[in-house]
Image 1 (cartoon, one colour):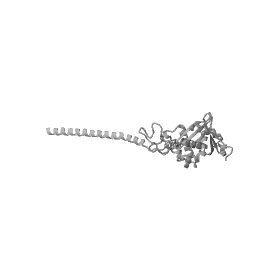
Image 2 (cartoon, helix red, strand yellow):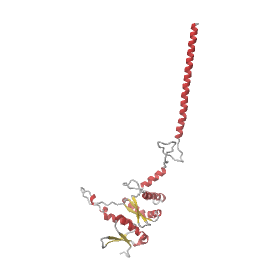
Image 3 (tube, rainbow, N blue to C red):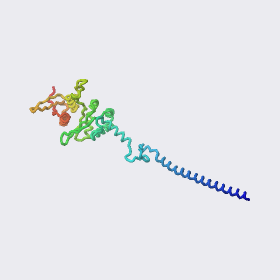
Image 4 (spheres, rainbow, N blue to C red):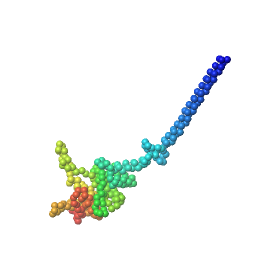
Length: 276
């Protein structure tokens, strides 16, 4: 009897222990399943955030602090960024970082002309400007001087008539002139070791003569005279081709003011009565 009682008690203890272990395992398994169930909605949320953007809205670059493809600030527009790059490519001045508002406006107008007209598109594609200035002629009238690279000047001259007409429509009561950007070399800039002569095209006289030709283009200069006054002042008289007198007569004050501003010399444009 004692042995039977002992065996019964031992079996009861083992059954109770086995049941406790089973319950613990079941509870542990239930906890793991619950954690997996909690992880699944998180993954689904991440997948929803990484949904592909539709073709209508276009692709948007996602920054570090983006959620669902929406940026914190402004949204990046690829077409607008590309247009700004094309406009900036027209400004070809390595010494100056950013263009002025006038220069950026001229670049934008050139890009619009290139896009609108098929005739100008192949010619304007590789051309650019160096700088632009506004010069006061009278109280009500102004002139815009556009400086272009010297190597591109001949290409600009082929399109100058049409470009001047188109740009003057945009700028009301303002004359537009194209002048090549030239460099003047001083005598102190010559290297004494090389002792090479200064190029004639980089002297002050040569540069000022070329500026005069650029201002009156496409009209040709027929003759020049220098008048010495009593006080020692000089007046340069420039005779233009009388064939273009009707077209240029209104622009003569602009030519005189621009040349005086750039070279600090007085000039007077005339049409000869007769040509030999």
